[in-house]
Image (cartoon, rainbow, N blue to C red; front, side):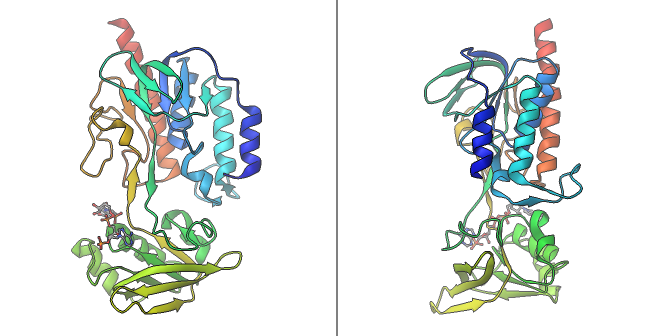
Length: 326
Ligand code: NAP
């Protein structure tokens, strides 16, 4: 996390309240979590939000965000999340910088445990997001936000007329490669096998596109640059031969891992581990809701996560009103 933003968050953080029971506990502090908290706190629901191990979520790892409405000149991801946090606190929610290590949704009130405390809630909103899988190549971490990206929709327009690498062979990789042809000079798809995993229709679209070149049986061995990426070293899986590609960016599209380990056996998950929603933002457990990338593997945008957070906040307020009438 950006040091000055972290210091600012610490300075402004409220002292942790001793209270242990809340009407709503929100787990996760990306756009979904903060927006859900803004809605529940504004509806006068006693709200606690656990910010988790990466307060602010994935946007804390990005640089400029150009597609979040309301910021005509763009805004840096960490700054956007600091503003969302301030707004959440101004609405009266309590933000706790702690990690949730266990939950019990089998009985009401629901239990939410941190390493040192146990909390209770009448309703819970899960907003723990999903993390893009990493390739683990040298330079991947160092050039994060400086040419290494995990989202073409977010970062593609920054690399106009440049050579671009996309790595992966699934539908996401093909979709990203096709999207990136709008901006890049050439798109180099680097895939570890000689066959794609993507659906036939996506494969055909990618094969037909004259700007897309395929590098079969290759993996990313190293990402190089100075202040930003300028070269990617690819390695042949069969011959071990290494080759340099001079590129301005690399988009990693090898899948996502939803952060749902904690909820296995508590709420229903799909076969890829994402939370299954029943109706609107309701999970399989009455009183437990989910919002953002933890259930949405289609859009994965800050603005859609915020939208889902808003929906969950409204759904929780309605659920609590109806429950109290019973
Ligand atoms: P995916 O289908 O799991 O594909 C991941 C790709 O990354 C595979 O080609 C895999 O190679 C490769 N890969 C995995 N780990 C790697 C590593 N360590 N190094 C190099 N390559 C690695 O993931 P996805 O493309 O994100 O799609 C996820 C789901 O969403 C799928 O069900 C997909 O159909 C769906 N989806 C649909 C659409 C659409 O319909 N428009 C768009 C996007 C996603 P191997 O092939 O060798 O295993």
